[in-house]
Amino acid sequence: MTATGCASAYKTVLPRPPDHYQKLGEARGNACGSMMILAPYNFIPVAELPFFGGDLNKRVENAYQNAIDSVPGATALLNVTMQENWFWWVLGSTKCVTITGEAIR
Image (cartoon, rainbow, N blue to C red):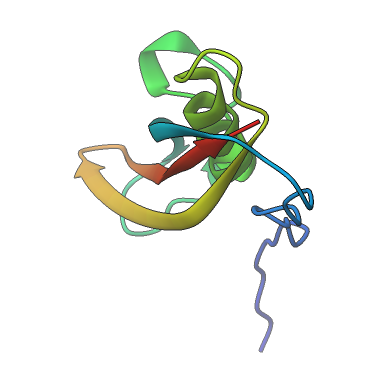
């Protein structure tokens, strides 16, 4: 009997904040990635194709960066929350991550 799988590296989402910072307001970012070939047996991650979303294995990192970019001048986030939603379609699935937090600089 054999089994296969895939994994990605651990990603530190929230870097340590500086000793002194200024709060800028709420930030929110979203990023998605897709897998193809007959749900629920998805095994082909889809690269950055606009129709399918983004890079599956970088969706948390991309959502965090999108949240920072949503507030001008922000360099990091505090009090971060993450939500992930999965959407199933005929030939695959899309996984979307939303990161929210308080933007700082």
